[in-house]
Each structure stands twice: as structure tokens, then as C-alpha cells.
Image 1 (cartoon, helix red, strand yellow):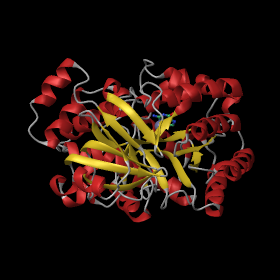
Image 2: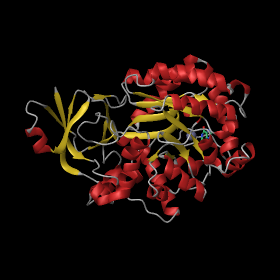
Image 3: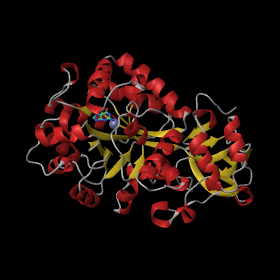
Image 4: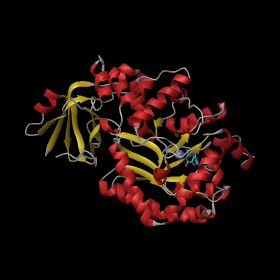
Length: 434
Ligand code: GUN
Ligand code: ZN
């Protein structure tokens, strides 16, 4: 059966960083998305889509904007419970809140409970794809992928590797990290809509032997992603220089172990040297920009436009629990504010592209999700531009799609997220389709 959603459609025709905002936005005032067998069969003017799909069941969106589901290309599901924890900068925050919480994931029942709560939250915020770090415990990975699979979601995840500079309960070995990750790849990678990401947490918590093992594992499974953190915080960068004195710089550590290449996703990448920027551009690796986290932990301001100019894939990410919100509206707003502080006013089209298509491409999932386009999986959300009085008042005055999008970025929250569809099925626990 074909199902058609009719209403204003937000979609992209191109990368706005390459083609400009106007050419990139393929907005339709009275558009339609036809869905068949979990995929998008057609997107276009409503009259045309309806005429070419006779017999389809047509539902109007009631003024809600039909948009691609958000893609969050870097976050930590085990940190759901410690979001909004006060305190200092990255390294103190990790030791005080993050590591004790992650140690609790040795209990599979705890992991399952948090995974359930996590996907309730991400879906309620319209995030249909997440790329999450798990913990060192294989059960934390099983809980994540099982819960995603039960809901039919396209997700990325991996077992975090850390064999030094962490509490006893959270330390593995190079060998265990390699073997357990390999077993999890066999179990989950490519199962349904799951992608496995080999996940050395960051250089300071891995010995050279463990990074070497991670590189070997990736070489054996090049269609997996590789995710880690890079140049987030000055104290972290100084620490890496002390731990790896022979490396040219932070990125150089990952390069040495075969951990920089197409399919690598580096979280943050804020304080890059000229050499690192040039080297990163040549690797094919992407960057997850985590603006609410960078504000919250006082980490710094990523040069998104500069990275994009170098041809580096960039996507937006919440980085929960270092990030302070599950909302991609908040995340786009924070990216805008960081741009402003750097003297670059990113347009609403640029911001929204980073939160959908840009993040999907960074995860090498651009063929599947991130945009409303025939052939992609039907992961989409309906957004109510009048969900609160102030949002209703401001969007009513919008004279262009861009203006409407910017009002949503600044003023909307999860109350604006209505139906959420994943592979053509409704999945928002708060707004089921009747
Ligand atoms: N660097 C290493 N681990 C983490 C983490 O969990 N969150 C953030 N923001 N940075 C990290
Ligand atoms: Zn992170």
C-alpha cells in the first residue's frame, strides 16, 4: 500500500556549503511524500504525487512541516542519566560523573532500562538516527542495538575501548577490546539497520597497543565506522602530547594507528593545528560538531565553515551527556551562536542540513537517511510550527521558508515534534499515529 503525507515539505537539493542556501533548499509549500514498503517512493508537488499514485491513502499534515528525521552523529547513550551535571571542564567531568555512571553498565538490566529511556527521548525529539558510544561492557552494546532493532531504527553504535587512565571497573585490555568488539561486529554489523563503529574512547584512555588493535580490527572490517574524540579541550590536548611524545599532534596519534580515514568520525575537532586541518582534509574522515557540549564544558568553538571549505564532512551532534540537550533545535541554535562568535552567521538551511543530511553523510549513511528523496528510507518527522504561543506568533510572521526554519531553530522544542516515522512506521512514543 502507498501512503502519502501532504503538507509543507522541507528537503534539500544540494549541500548548502557548496551551492548556497537558496539552491540547496527544495522547499515545497504544498508538497507530498509518498511512502511504499518503508521507503520514500516520491517527493514533489502534492497534486503531481497524488496523481501519479492512484489509490494511495492521503493524509494531510495539518500545517505541520514534513522534514527528514534528525541524525545525531555523536552521543553517549550511557550518559542519559547524568545529563546536566555541573562541574568544570572535560577531564573533571569525565572522572566525577561519567566514569562512575558508565561503570553501572556492567549490569545488563541497567543497560536495557537506559537504552529504552534513551530511545524514548531521542524519538520524542525527532532524532531517527543516533551514533552512540556504549561502554566497555558488551551487554551495553547488545542493549543499544536490541532496543533500536525492536523499534526498527537505523543506528550506529560500538563498544567503547579504554585500557588506561580510567577506574578499574572501566578498564579493559587491548586483547579484550579487540576480541569483544570483533564478536559484536559479527553479531550486529549489518543486521537490519545497524552499523557498527569501532570505538576507542579517545587517545588518553588507550595504550598504543590498544590503538594498534583498534586499527587492525578496522582494517579487517573497513565497512564499519570508527568513532573517537579529537582536540576537544586544551588540557586534553596537552595530556595527549605527554602520553604520545613521538606523535606530531593529536590527529597524528590516530593516523599512526590507522584510525584516520574514510568512515572515521571525530567528535569535536575544535583546536586543530594547521597541519591537522590539512591532514584531516586528505583522510576522508568526518567531524561531529557538538555545540551544546562545547558551550557546556567550556571547550571552545569549532570552525565548521572552515572544515567544510576544506571538503571535510561535518554533521551536528548532541554529545549527550556532555551536551546539554536532546533537542536538535537547541543544537542548531548553539551551532548558530558558535558561528556568530567566530564571525560566521550560518543560515537556517546550513544549520538544518548539518542536523540531517550532513550528519548522515558523515556517518556514510547518505544513501539511506538524512533527506526526503525517492529511494531513501522513510525516516521523517512532522513539526508543528504553532506548538507554543511564542512559536506560533513568530512563525505566523515568517514570509519565507528560511525565516520559518530559523524561528523553529530558536524557539521550538520537543513539543513541536509530532509524528515521527522510521522506515515508514510511526515510532514517536508521545505522538502515535492513529
Ligand atoms: N572525551 C572522552 N570521552 C568523552 C565523553 O564521554 N564526552 C566528551 N564530551 N568528551 C569525551
Ligand atoms: Zn562525546
